[in-house]
Amino acid sequence: MRYLSTRGDATPRQFCDILLEGLAPDGGLYLPEAYPQVGGRLAQLRQTYADQGYAALAFEILSLYIDDIPAQDLRAICAKTYTAEVFGTPQITPLRRLEGQLFIEALSNGPTLAFKDMAMQLLGNLFEYELARRGEELNILGATSGDTGSAAEYAMRGKKGVRVFMTSPHGRMSPFQQAQMFSLQDENIHNIAIEGVFDDCQDIVKAVSNDLEFKRQYKIGTVNSINWARLLAQVVYYFAGYFQATQADTEKVSFTVPSGNFGNICAGHVARQMGLPIARLVVATNENDVLDEFFRTGVYQVRGAAATYETSSPSMDISKASNFERFVFDLVGRDGARTRALFTDGVARQGRFDLSQDAAFADAAARFGFASGKSTHADRLATIRDCAQRLGQMVDTHTADGIKVAREHLGAEPMIVLETALPIKFAATIEEALGRPPERPARFDGIESLPKRVTVLPADVDQVKALIVRHCGA
Ligand SMILES: *Cc1c(COP(=O)(O)O)cnc(C)c1O
Image 1 (spheres, rainbow, N blue to C red):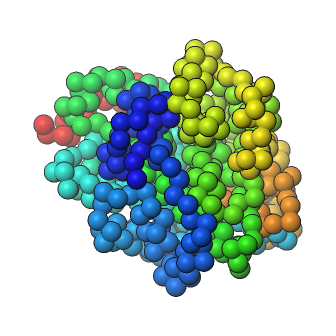
Image 2: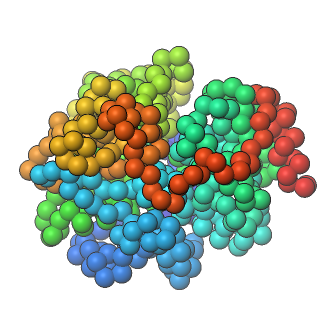
Image 3: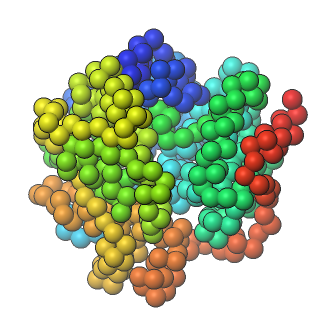
């Protein structure tokens, strides 16, 4: 399998070439040159999943896209990643019925209790493997407001050849999120609390990455959601959800996905393009509804930091969806020049593009199955209450957004909502809704009182660079 850029650069690259890279050199995102078709192999994949479990299914899907890692190595990486010890259950992503045809697929039983573990744990093992093979090292520099940073740290802790430098806004993450990250004592994990807000952290990461000399000398890399390997890892659980909800491959299902950067649901798009029988892919947003607006109107209008609301589903507080370009590339018939124009002349220069008059948009729903909806703080509270009081199930705020929107799109087929986090991560809103705190998995008892390992720095690029230099011993 070869990879190309959404902006037209077709220099052939293989999986491991793009594994450690971010954007393509022309500023686009990487995609496979074609989606492998599995329509005729579904029964076989279903059997593999039933007999050998999630890790074996992951190997079957991943191997369609990766031919520069020997099969036995890739199989071992999948087996080491998707274990009951790491993900809490032998099914890895168990499906449960909420009511009627409405199901929840749990993606949130990994080490940090959010779905980002599903991809990040694989990425950690792939990085370690590829860096050892090349005899190289990598220093991952990131900015987090919570879920991404902790998932990255738990995936990279103790890995050879990798260090993590994770910036976060000092004092602004929930006590639980701070405890998760700062209690890690691994030597290769470095928490940097920046005296500022999340945007200050992001600006520091950008400034360091734009210093090409420093970036090369200190082998700076990232693990953000545009990484193709992360997206590919997520494709697997759409298959696992489908196999759990159906008996036969003639049946269809729909998915509703709480969305921010369009990464999770983009993996559903890839699964559907591969021939998985998905009727509809429903995008659920919170008050930051740029994606809902696009799917309703054909206008993609990004917003600045000032127009991005702080909500009670904070991992979706995003007003520029970094993976959206991948879908748009497919939508416009894989026209790289057109995609480039939409995202440079359009998004970068004018903050928007308008496909409302375009034939491609007119039949987007029919061709790609997309639908969308939006959920607000009041909806979230009402959904959390209804699920707890009437159905006896506690759900997190992001999953509640998904359930609210899924209910507006129910059809005859099973509707699977992806559970993207556990309630304990967002305890304050659960208490607001239910008047009592969420359940806490036993392994997290008392983590707030563990010793913390974090360096507090002012929002100053040079001081962050100096810290990196100190720990690299170069
Ligand atoms: C990251 C995240 C999301 C949004 O996922 P995208 O891939 O960015 O659309 C939703 N819910 C939770 C809990 C998350 O951590």
